[in-house]
Every structure is written in C-alpha cells, then in structure tokens.
Image (tube, rainbow, N blue to C red; front, side):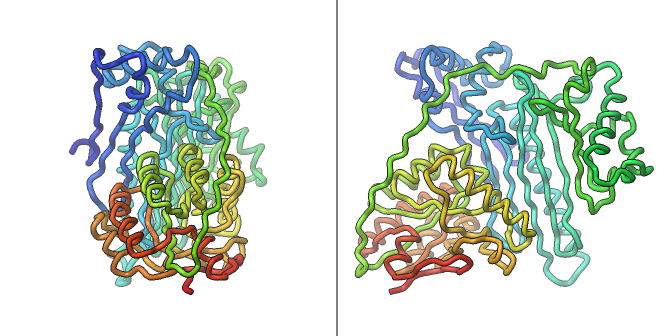
Length: 530
C-alpha cells in the first residue's frame, strides 16, 4: 500500500454512461476512498456522500455536472479542468456549512478510545488528490513521531507511560484559489511536567494542487515587512511590553525566512505561527502573530480578495419534530449508544437498520464534526434518536482546566443548537474520564455504559456482536462507535437477535425515565435496571 498505508482510489465514469438524469449517480460515484492499514489508532473510511451536489438548483447544475464528469475522468490531470469548473466542484463538495475557523474542507477523524494512550486527530479533506495526500502525510508523521517518542519515554522509567495526542484544525480561504490549513497539536506524556503545543500551517493553491511557500505569496521587501508586522502585533497584544524587547524575541523575529515559514492566510490577514520557546519562554505556549493585509500593501504577490465561485445556497431544512413512541416498562429494554460521529457513510447505515427495527438510539457526537455532516445529524434527530454531547474534539476532560472544559462542552452545544431545535441534555465524557473538576464545571448528567463492545479496538463485527449478545441484560447501556463499518455490520446481527428476544431499543433518556430515574447534573449513569 502506497504513501505509508494509504491508497487513493479513483473512480472513473464513461461519458456514454452519463444521462440527463444521472447527476446524482455522478455525485454518488465521486468516492475518494482512503484506507489505512490496521494499527493502534483507528481511521474511519472516508467517502463523499451521495448526491451532495443535487441539493443545488438552477443553472449551476449544468456547471456541476460538467465539473463532476471532468473531475472523475481526469482527477490526476488538473490541466483538463477550467478554473471555473475546479472552483465550482471544490466549493460544492467541500464547503459543508463553513464556520468562521473551518471555511473549507470536510472533517476527517482518527480517534482511539484508549484512556492510557489517547489519540484524537481531526483534519480537513479538500477533495483534491495532491493536496489531500500531503495532509495525510503530515498526519501520519505526527502519529509516527508520537509512537517513537512514547517508546523513548518508556525507556526512562519502569512504570507504564501514559500519553495523549490531540490534533485539531482550522482552515481558511484567501481570495478565490488559496486555502490554508492550520493543525494545532497538543502532546503529553506522563513523564513530562507539562504538555507541549505546536502549530503546523500549510497554504495551498487549489487550482494547481500544490503547497505554496513564502516566495509564492510575497514579494519585494516582504521579510522586513513581516518582521515589522510581527513585532507590532505582539507589542499591541502583549500585556508585557518588556517581553518584546528580549534578545530571544528580537532574534526570533528578525527578517529571516526561517522565522516565518509557518504561516497561513485568512480572509483578512497573514498569521505567523512560532514554535513553543522560539520567541517567548516555553510556558507561554506556541504564540501567533496576525498582520492585516492592508499593512502588507505591495508585499503580496497573490490576490487575497474575492470569494470562490458563487453557487446557489442549499435550502434550509425544516426539521420534523419526532413522534413520541410508546415504551412498555414491563418489557426488557436496552439503550444503544454511538460515539464520535456523525460519519457520512457509517451513520446512515446504522440509521437505516434502526429504522428497520423501529429502534431508537443515542448518538454522542463531536462538536467539530457536526457542521461537516449536518444532514446526518438532522436525520438522527428527525427519526427520533437522542443527540448527546461528546465534547468538541474528543479531549480527555479530566486533563483539562476549567476554561478548556467549558469550551469543549459549550462549543459543542452551540454548534448542535444551530442545526437542531435544542442542545443536548446528556454528556458522555471521552474515554469515560471524569474528575471532580469536570463534575463541577459541567452542568449535565454523565452517561457511561454497562457493555463496552471495544469496537474501536478489535474492529471485528463478530466480536462486537458477541460482546453484546453474550452479556446483554435488561437496562444495559451499550457503547459503540459510528465511525467503523464493522460496527454497522455488527448491528445487522445485534438488532434482529435482540428484537427476537423481546428487547425494546430506546434512547438513554427514555431508559432512565421508564425506570423512574431523573437524571441530575454531575451524576453518572451506566445502566438502569428495573
């Protein structure tokens, strides 16, 4: 398997197979499959959702159809796409409900659920092969480096070393063809006194499918202008002006290319990212300076104004209030729960199965995924399933401070509230990790589980189904994850088997209610027996 285990699968469509009513088929066939060999972290299979472009209306359909045909037949040959076609396709497929800090790309996640060696990585997929492979290479390097560092740390002690790797992203558009990705990396080992932060920024030309460097973006006396802009930014924002007069700060901000290689372009400014300890003491983290474009007049080589090709907006979805379903308190019942989604392929498969067996479940979603897969989230809601909060990016809440905990919960609630009528009532902490600080900071009931399928680890549908069917009893809360195809496969066995035994499939809130349990903030619920 090439590129460290990833295989980029390209599907082609013959012209003769395309008809006037074949647009949705074309969009369904635009499947970019990435496959990662089995390892200690789990990467979900990524495909484009069927008929994404079909939600757009009017004459733009003609543009999209043409772009889709060209895209599929000539993915490796960018010269065959006009600028208009490339922009139309990129915006249609990879601008899902853009937010202020995630303006382009669909969120892909690599999440394990091992509390001793926690890995939670989130990054954008742009839909352009050359760019996506570069991003994947960076992600693989981060994982590899973390594993190697863990091995080194383990050699320094006789006790087991615990580790955390948390990666999230922001993405920005500058002008009509320049995209930036910023990965924020937090790494921690139990042998370290403090976590280490760093930022990895990359700028891409969407039309040429390549990474851009300083020389591609800037011209003339740009190094002097960047140096001046960085120093001005820190002096205006720093509460300690003396910190910007130190030898360390001045050396790290001199007009030298090496000082400004880590940069991104937003809609209105250049951002320069520095290493932890590069210009300020290490305890100050990884600092960032922002220079408005107006301060760089004459030093910019590219156009930074103008949006991508405008297309018709997707119509707003009117959400249907789910009908209440009768639950017999005298019959056995279980709560199926799914974490870490939504996922564009696996979650709909599970929803189809749940509908087939008149089952309701609880989906504990990640805040940084709901905008990318808003349609899946809304389907969960309208089909009567419960939506729970699973944090913003799968950080271990027991290892965070009060402000960080508040962000993880509130940001997720807010993003869900923008898409659904209400915010989640229940919260499942990543890794099941709760401490007193989390209990005090989060005013929600905590939901854990009584059966852990370990689907994130074994990824065997048979093992997942056996874990449930051999242990299940009335009142169980069953933990699964809707990131893995094996979990959907297991549900094809679990649902009919339990239905045949007379089990009802209910949400967590329904389970607690039918057992006369009123969930209270700060309390932990793992099951609800009669």
